[in-house]
Length: 274
Image (cartoon, helix red, strand yellow):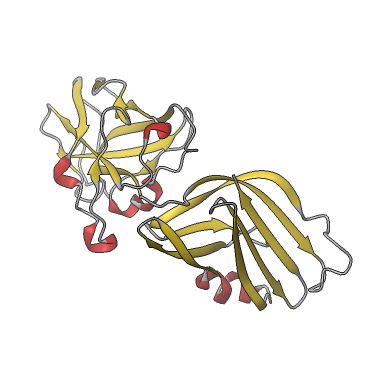
């Protein structure tokens, strides 16, 4: 939908992907949520790949591309999330190189950004809005012209260990069944400063929506629900009906969360812990 007719490049788009060799994902506001950085907080360095492509044809000559932080784009999503972001400092994010070339006859050049999760202040909302420019007068796509890498200041977000206990009866009288597991990892992904999403181990791994209150650093009033769209959608289509819960138990200074619910035929417990 971003490729105009004609035989010469007329649009430039930006995409990105985590780690080497991963598939690239479109940028723009449509990809804003996916551009939230959820690397484990203890990581010293993680790599994100950025791809800059031209659409509508191949380069007729070498095209010089420059990528840079764009402070003018940092409020682009404000109408959707009402969050004001702080620019990521160089100690948190840096470009391996900010310049590159799309060679003659090609359509693509790749860049790398290094993030340092262990240096991120998790209490703040940070953003690295990236924009690409070129020296060939190629216009940037109106809806895919930026990448909005960001972190949301949420005190419980990040990587967790994950155990899942499933019983084949609501009372769990026979104990856990073979669909249970322990020692996996997952991410409590922030949607805003007091709201995270995390998958359950049951069925299609629908998300719990976990919310809480934060009063000057004192967290309270934790609540958990299964994503309503899944409950009325895929789960309803499969005949799954929630009978009780989900309940949530918060322990160990807000580093362990136990969520439980029962259906007509199952008892499911997810445990997320540091």
